[in-house]
Image 1: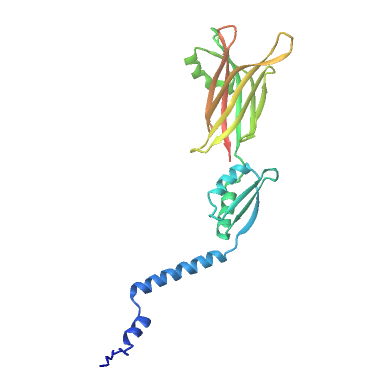
Image 2: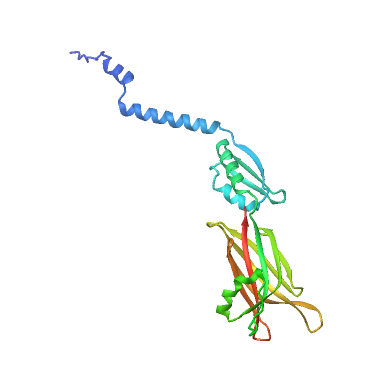
Amino acid sequence: MTTRTRINTDTTDLRRFLFYPRKSVVSAFIRALVVLVATSAFADEALLTKAFVIKFRKVDEVASVVNGLLSEKGAVTMQPRLQTLVVQDYEKNIRQIEMAISAFDVPPPAVEISVKLVRATKNPDVGPIADEIKNMAKLGEVLKYNQYALLDSGLIQCQEGESTVLSLAKEYQLSFLPDVIQEGNGIIRLKNFQLQKRKKDADGKDVFVPLISVTLNLRNEETLVLGASRFEDSNQALMVVLNGKVKK
């Protein structure tokens, strides 16, 4: 006896599977296609190379800013002798880096420091006080001095990070390194602020002896008075009056 097996020739299910796939299959296919297109477009985008000449800031400072804006493929090379950064990245990142460098690489702020060297005295016979130091009369009520004489004065104009030296009254020398802290109206930090007095050493050579050595924070357009030292006569003292201004 021969057994016959019936073969279903109905192709409806096959056509339905081929031409009407399930939604999950379609979604997976679309996601894969999107990733493929995006990857292809990213791969086709060329890396650009651009050199930036740094005019005001240190090259390594600008490089630190650039590093935070690079893509995974980006790179930055420093050329300190030429004050140059060479950046390689995609065009979009290069544009962002260019704007960041322009905003960061700007001239350092300029500062103007007014300096007065004043001798304070306890004197029963009070004489006239110069207009330039009349505001020290209130200070005298605290320090118990009642007579003030202006020994010398000077006006220093310098830029942030520029070492400054000023000679006062022939035998004094003042020096500092200005730094500007941008908070509100600005704070001028005077690093390594020193007031020195010229004296003769045992060999008769001129040497400078420090009277003040400190770092100061001077608020913009505010006056600061420093007591430098007492003279041998305890009725006299040396003071420095400072007024700073951030120039915009």
